[in-house]
Image (tube, rainbow, N blue to C red):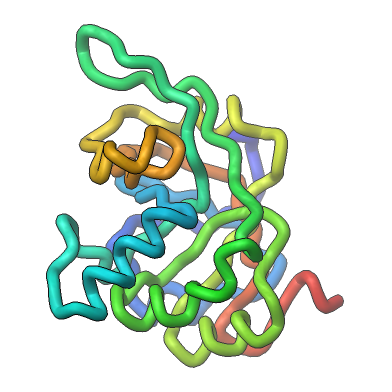
Length: 185
């Protein structure tokens, strides 16, 4: 992690009390676990949840990273080489329902989300954290291991990756629970 003074350290599963203290512009890092999800994983998760099925992992309090990691299969499992963020706004049509049905507390990506989505995230008790685009190798350095990859049939970029991380960041609180949105300043 790059040194950022006064960065708040988060450890999922997150609760509303933890994220309510955060304000737009605050720096945070995440340790323990983050979970990747992009377009196809969102769509499959929503389809499953709408039909009353359970997901293969509990996302309550999770930090979801909009990312399709570049990884290499090794004898010991997967090694993530680069894990840059995906543009989050491309998931906007699914964001609010995904958060509502899963109980996710933080989304991580680049470029922000639409104003309507930001309002819905606040209502649902979820923050948006921005990670710098083009810094995939920096992100990969904070990934200490791959716990599992789910829905491999979607392809490695679209599968859900459960990643063990230490000091993943720096992340900037871009949408907080108090009406702040860094993209509207």
